[in-house]
Image (cartoon, rainbow, N blue to C red; front, side, top):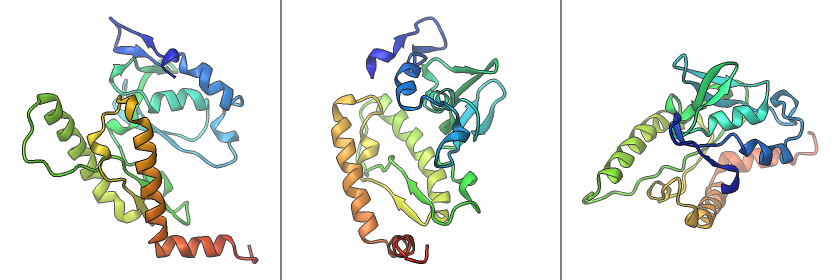
Length: 198
């Protein structure tokens, strides 16, 4: 994946993710959101106009790139002459497009923070403050989910710590299985899906 990321020094980000389109094109050759088998809504921030945008149609890869574009780290993605960045800037738990359109909503949060007695680095302090702000928004919207999966300890792992990618995978996998096994609403949903009447 790293071979698709290019330095972008002097621009509006440290690196550019433009070349990730080559990788994504292999998996999404159609490249149209509206043509996907499962309806999809992608949240991104229109940085030019300072507003949240939900993509439900149009170029899929461009919308995915915009949604993953962390400001300051990645160079903004240009769509129709305007700058787009990560939707999490304005809405990190975008459940709103799903309300009244889905029978069962599963939420996922990877920002669980453990209690700490002290903090010794300013970067850790700033990161924790950011995650606390994000978590506050998630906590307010969590009751709207039928099922919430929140792996413990994920908030302590840096977004760019690629060495812990496998650890992140297994933490999320194990927490998902545990949550499903103890979820009565999910069990009922599975019964409905497996019902011969459907």
